[in-house]
Amino acid sequence: MTMNEAMGVPATVIKIGGSTLGAQDTSLQDIVELHREGLRPVVVHGGGAMISDWLKRLDIESHFVDGLRSTSAPAMEVVLGVLRGVVNTQLVSEIIALGGRAVGLSGVDGAIVRGEQYDERLGLVGRITEANADILTSLLDAGVIPVIAPIALEAPHSEQQAGTPGRAQALNINADTMAGEIARALNAAQLIFLTDVDGLMDGAGAVVESLGAEQAERLRAEGVLSGGMIPKIDACFRAAEVGVAAFIANGTQPHTVHRLVSGERIGTRIEA
Ligand SMILES: Nc1ncnc2c1ncn2[C@@H]1O[C@H](COP(=O)(O)OP(=O)(O)OP(=O)(O)O)[C@@H](O)[C@H]1O
Ligand SMILES: [Mg+2]
View: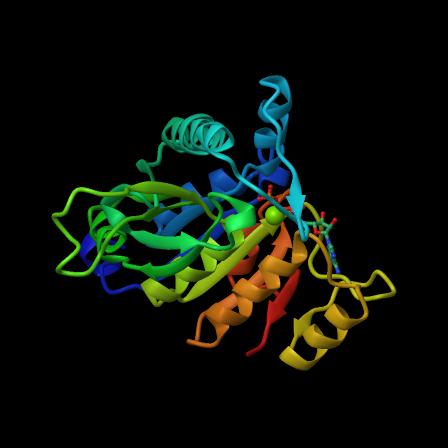
């Protein structure tokens, strides 16, 4: 497919879990190959485990409020350094080494994603208020794979406020939430969560092949849906609501992205 033919193709958002980073999997290889064949991939990454490790190493206190890590100003510096610096740069370098073209950015760049503080007790953790995919579309049109770190911009936005000097703060955003909102803003064809398990598992430990809203609520109420799976499922339904096909699959297995994009039924598919 030529680049011009690829311009009308909707995007595919792929969230690479921090849980699978550094694992020698084929996800990036798949992404580069599929991009060459005309897929328009947008990569969003996590990195929670590396942030925890650096906070410990630097002896910066961080505590949890209702299961969410609060982010103080010093902790935010670590979040920025690790996500936008270490993890993002690593992914961009690897894609380029595999022969792809990638550009690294966060939601702050070009104000792609804006947010507001979630709860005072959580510090600089943000909720997304707005996502604008124009820059991502331009990058895709130019044959570039955008690689996005989950950070949003908290800044004045209205006409009156714009131009007045004030707060401009980066906010820590859950990577799954970020991927879901970007998929929505892009009107993506697909949203793929690559993680370290085969999909959403039911109470008996079997992968749920097709997940509807009712079963999701039941699994949540039963406590089967917990931890890192919660923001993923929420993001899947947010995206599925506007027609995005959403999947959760095991990124550590060979050619998971390839198989999903070719329509193979692996992992969990979310049905809105
Ligand atoms: N019902 C469930 N089915 C499958 N996994 C579940 C379920 N409930 C909770 N989990 C947990 O969710 C984890 C995946 O989410 P997690 O946040 O740890 O990884 P990630 O999102 O891929 O990586 P990161 O958060 O670093 O970006 C699984 O390893 C599993 O422990
Ligand atoms: Mg997670």
